[in-house]
Length: 168
Image 1: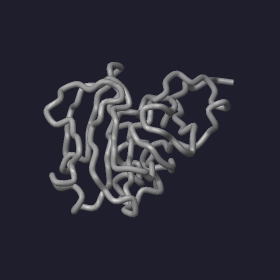
Image 2: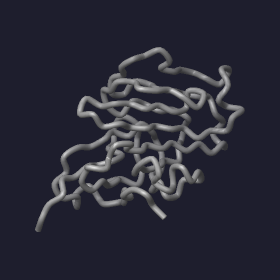
Image 3: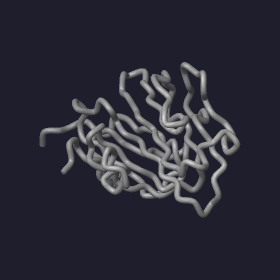
C-alpha cells in the first residue's frame, strides 16, 4: 500500500512538460522508494521519493536551501527550497559508522546551504551497504514526478524531475 504518489522511472527525453530537476545529493544506483527496507520510507507515508544504493556515504545539498532540521545522528536533513518545497534527505548506514570518529565532514550549525555543499560525509568501508533517500515532504499538489536516470552522480545528475500535468 502506498500513501502518496510513487516516483517511477522515465527516461529524461520522454518526460512531458518538465518544470524542475532536483539534483542528486548521492552517487550510485537509483531505485524507487518502495524498495527501501524501512516501511516509513517505502510506504510513501512521508511523501514520494527515491533511494540510491551509494558508492560512498556522502550527501550533498541538491539545491540552495534553508536547513530546517538535522536528526538521526547527523544522517537526516530537512531542507526548504526557495520555492517552498520540503526535501527530506536520509542516509541509512550502520550505527557503528555514525560515530564522530567516522565523520569526515558535516554541516552542523549551518542555517543555509548552497547547491553542492557537503551535508554529511562518513568514512564507511566499501563493502558496507549504504542507502541514501530523498523524499518530497509536501508534494501533494505537485504534478507527476519521475527519476530520469538509473545511475546518478552527486551534484551533477538530476535525481528527480517534476513535470507539469497536461490535459491531452
